[in-house]
Image (cartoon, rainbow, N blue to C red; front, side, top):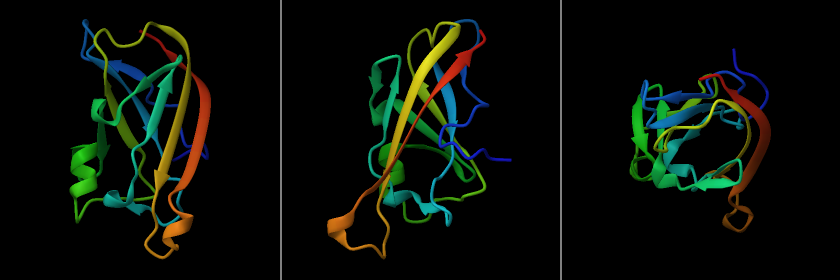
Length: 132
């Protein structure tokens, strides 16, 4: 079950085994219909004051793993409401165990909203814990 928060409380962890190559977090689509991936604008992810570029983030969606550039070029990738996206962020060594301040801003366009009112933006911040 998805939580109301854009940043989900489960799934914040280091990846890559004993020598972490990065970390993951789960985010949900804030839009009740889900969204076509090519309507996403470049996200902003900040952890403990360090901003991560969209090119450092791989998006795990039900249909596969994608770079942000691949999402922008896609014509058939959809992010359904009922599935959290698993964002894998490249960071040598991962994050230190402990509490981290996480902020995520997601911007997306909607095909039926006038151009001058776009993109829509959703921002969430929360404390998240890396256990190991």
